Each structure stands twice: as C-alpha cells, then as structure tokens.
Length: 65
Image (cartoon, rainbow, N blue to C red; front, top):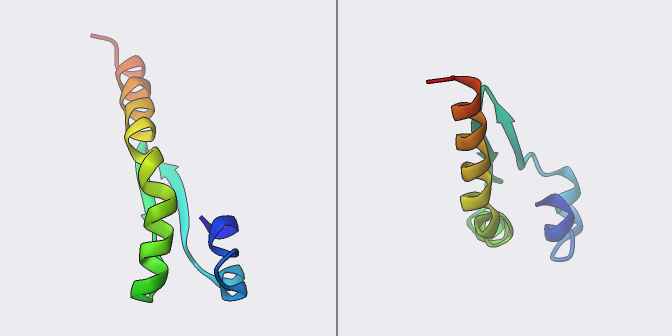
C-alpha cells in the first residue's frame, strides 16, 4: 500500500498503514485521513479475496479432519 500511495503524496512514507498476517488472520491497518483510506483500499481491495482464500486453505491444511 505504501509504495502505491507514495505516487499521491510523499507523506505516505511515514504512514502507519500496513497489511500482514498473524495467527492466520489478515490484518489491515489504514491511515487516519479519509482520502488516504480510500487510496489504500483502492490498492488492497483487489487482493483481499485471494489472500483470504490462501489463509483459509492454510488453516484447513493445518487442521486435518
């Protein structure tokens, strides 16, 4: 997110926005301004379905039936 939003403003460099995984959960932190949130979501939304699918597959494989 940060690299893409740097195209809009150099202030993105100090943004606390981040995407990561912890305990098989997708975590997305977004910046404080409404405009910056929209810009970040435009970047990350297209990959969320695939990310969740991968996490689901991983959790299913970690817990045999």
